[in-house]
Length: 516
Image 1: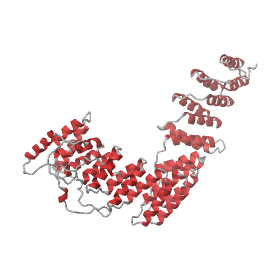
Image 2 (image 1 turned 135 degrees about the horizontal axis):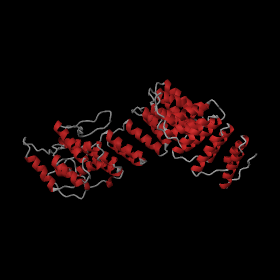
Image 3 (image 1 turned 90 degrees about the vertical axis):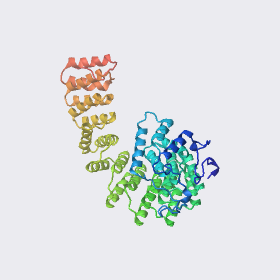
């Protein structure tokens, strides 16, 4: 890691800030007005003590971090806590006033801080900064941090840790890394949670090399990574396609004293599934179970996603069975992923079973999947007639609900209803489709007209033709042939001539003519 990139203006944290002095660093700007305000707070303190108490960290008792973190520190890191109820109310009041501002200008915010923010200890100041982070206001937290020396407060380990979180929230990861290096240089060791946040942020943005450099810094100060940190690195390796490296890291973790958890295995499993190696991911699942780990729904969903991407959704059904055997309840993502894969690869009947199970378990199916299911059932029902009722049932559920039915679903459903001679429902769907603002294809109109004429309902077929005219939609010879033929069968020569003439006016010459 390039230590030379660190700003030279970071003050040594063990020095007492006697008075503010100009500094070129944006992190350590000072203003005499704020210093005078701090002194006035001190003068009005009834106890006689300095309200803005400067914490000399060199006098702290030497303690160690919890063994879970594997970190050692020469100083005690302050806990994030408030010293009194009054302090809690003061922080909340400050946050509320900031949220009420129409514009979040730094000068206005600092003005509020001068009026309400006379915090006596760095612990209270840290509590304010963390409250701002939780409130998703990292810029305001950084603005206050820039003024910390003006209030005669010395930042401690927790202060810097919060700043790292702020920079991660702002996606300024280079600055977050510089703060980390500055901490280490001055004897502050961040806790595992802060390191995890930084490494996770770097990995999520594909900056794996930077994340590994942070891990190297931890090694130099004798800090042992936690399993959570390794999990972030494993996800980062898989994110950039370095699946083999992730697998090797997993093997090294198993040999170390750190015991991997189920998320460790899940991260590598996800990497294998994304590159078409779902069978190897399944082997890792078996290995995790042998170690006594309990896979959760996220672990199984990883396998569903992998098998469906590989065009092997039936393997997903086997995973679903195994999932239930392990008393792991499927969630909405489980069913949706499996349903999508089965429909995509033409396993319509199996998709219908998954859909019914999903609904029985109380999960909502999104509109996209419902449309795909109806279209799949309509196509399949041409050969497997028993599927028509299911297609119609799902379609009716969409009609009665708030889910949007798209144009292609309407078209296929109307065609299927015509094939099943359900003409009342077909005409109703056609009218509903037009009412939704869709423009049906000519083939959709022709299917309805032809089927009505075959059923001897020529009058209704003429009404459908008039709907085509009203919408300014085009017609072709197929639109008129069944009508003329039907009128000829009924002996309506004048009617057949009228339809034939209407076709000629539109530039269409039907291949069937009126007959007396």
